[in-house]
Image (cartoon, rainbow over all chains, first blue to last red; front, side, top):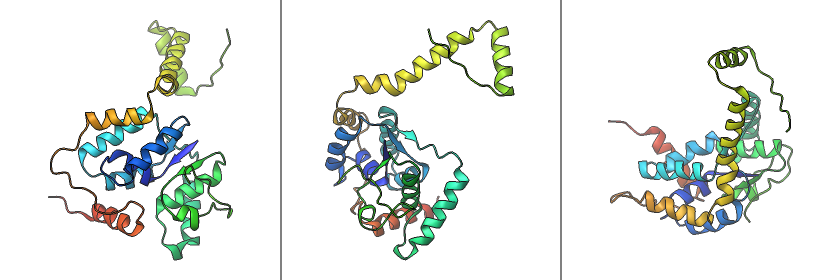
Length: 137
Length: 94
């Protein structure tokens, strides 16, 4: 299962973005697996895709690739864990979406996060301190 | 044929009773719902062209109209991304 971060989502929905070619190449490889994302990522994506046509492409992408919402179960529990994680990494100034992906990566061990953010390789870890499995190198 | 048992709460039990009274066969309804969801989640996936082909058709169907500004920062630049998101949150609506 692939958990989508904001960077590939925005790159895929903006063909003029410098990461678009990379994201398309990765999509060809990863789209055979179930794709998931979360509200925090979609919120960031919409902020970075402000034009209606960009959001229409986002909608079409979510539909065509049957991107599902990550099922958290008890969202309140996840919020608490996300806030704890944000405290732990406060010196690196993380965002909610970073924390959310790191926390749910710890919940579901089969998840691999698809991101182009360096921090997922270099700094962010799951709540138990282990590395976050990534979908792209 | 396999038998599938589904637990229902009070509200859904009431709905099922009303549907039966309206002449709906619940087993047919369930089979249709399963087929529809399977087609949506699995069937289209199996028949899919390459992912790149799907994206190309999306780009063709929804091209940028003139005047859509190009993003001037790298999406991997967290500071620039945060600045853009913050600006969007703080924007003033007319």
